[in-house]
Length: 194
Image (cartoon, rainbow, N blue to C red):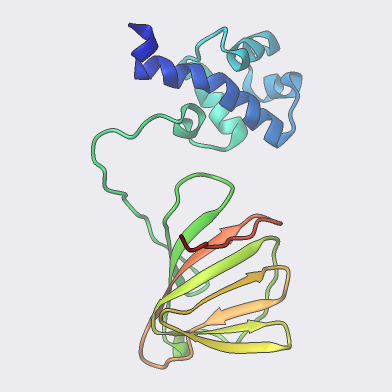
């Protein structure tokens, strides 16, 4: 019975997801057609659900929207429930991504090496908000010219990243680890008690 078919439910939801993605990036059907090679009428039928997408259509759409195909169809996870994390090293730090979707709020575990491995504070800015929670060790947070604070394990901070900022590990021998959540501009991250 199609009404209870989970695959049919996933496929029915693809059209609305494609329409939202196109709206988010601000493309017309004609412009999207130029990027993908898919005719505007076919794109329209995909977005309204009158046509089920084929892999040959999802690949160019995935490239045009810069999202994985899984995000286009919001396919349910199958198989191995473990999350396979791929650490990235940048600016002398190790970032372990904890979220896998492109855009929106992103979460990372960040490992700060001892201070002898970090340069002196160099304040930076970017759009958005950041929230972090110190898991182990101590981190130093410099916000503008007014605030220079130490946060220890169990403490958290939140700030607008348009404020010049720097975060580092003041310890000479121990690493510091934090869970950091980055939100897009205007998006604040708050935890509310139950």
